[in-house]
Image (cartoon, rainbow, N blue to C red):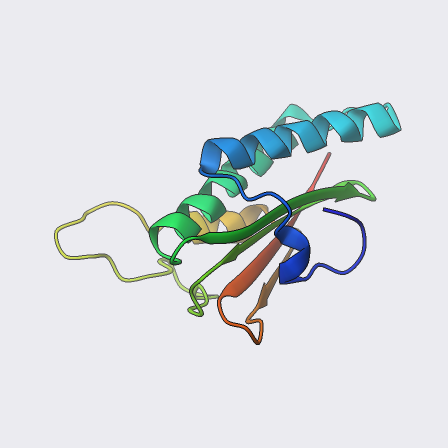
Amino acid sequence: MTSGQHTPDSVRSWIPRDAAGARAQVAEAFARAVAGTGSPPSPTALGDALLVTSELVSNALRHGGGLTGFGVECDRGAMTITVADASGELPHLTGGQGRKREAGLGEGGFGWPLIRLLALEIRLRLPPRGGKTIEVRLPLH
């Protein structure tokens, strides 16, 4: 993804098939950030970014009607992870669980609060063509 304003179309260049592919893109972006600044991101920051990536992509695949866009960008000491999916339903901004549990399932509901805890900034958008885009900005240090 290039610098500048993040739009749903700008996150369409390569869409990973799963969370592992998305995490690989995030790890590559961290490696480029190290090469560009000479100041390595902290291992905790990398772990946080990989965790947030897993949560966002897994939720898009599981609950969002499929991943329609993905991007990662590093600038000014932070990383922005952008995930777009086919659902127009936004995550709940407050409370413990972001969605009601399906009947019979006793796990889940911790991802969105965790993302909110780790993020410097979160942007949610409902593009005119449908779906949603979530941008999460995380510190590199």
